[in-house]
Image 1 (cartoon, rainbow, N blue to C red):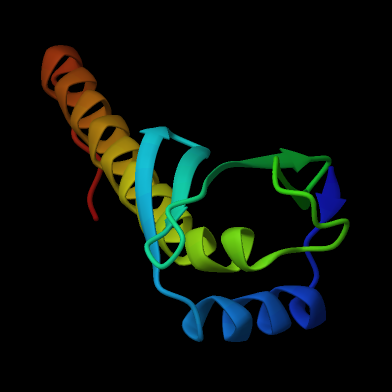
Image 2 (cartoon, helix red, strand yellow):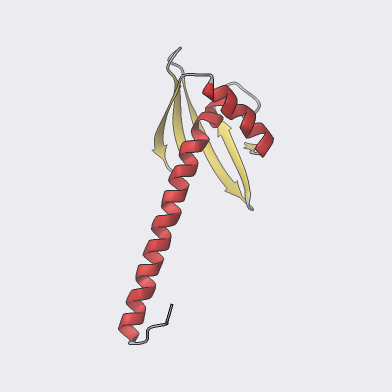
Length: 107
């Protein structure tokens, strides 16, 4: 597991842009990244531990690789969508509780 920093992820994203990669979601935080040029596929996982961000890839690289760089953008999009969905669900539950109690807070 490798810690993601601004410096190492920027380099990995640049390497990914120079490659012909296809990213597919296996499940949230787990992605299959295929190099369309040579057909090789690798699995990338993202983690968050104590506020720090980590990733791992099953390719032979020992640094933040192009597969991580190629999949992090899609991972961020999915994470933001999940955050928005959770916020909307929490708001809906809060509004329902206000209606049930007969007490509505002013916004």
